[in-house]
Image (cartoon, rainbow, N blue to C red):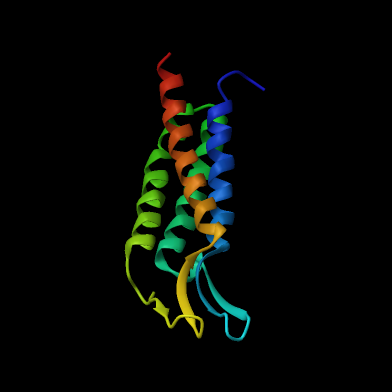
Length: 143
């Protein structure tokens, strides 16, 4: 492997991880009852929301730019900072928008609350990694 392909390949790999993370469950509603001794959850995948679709497209674009950067034009991997930041912004919007999320607590009888699932955290980590590795590929280019 030629020197200087590490960061663009990392951009491509993290972009692919972002695509996978967009398909995973991001959030859900969990209802539990101590009185009945059980709980029920309903999950929502990332692609069920516009923020997840944006993250999926951003991951695809970042992966393509990373591969293009690894093939010889490292500055193209640096352009992946744009979809990385777009995915980060949409992930923050997803968490901060109230939407149809609500909480209800009736003591031990019934408790309903929104929860974040591991897919959202995986998407956040992948989007952050795409951003960091794309910036590092630009910094490495200047040397």
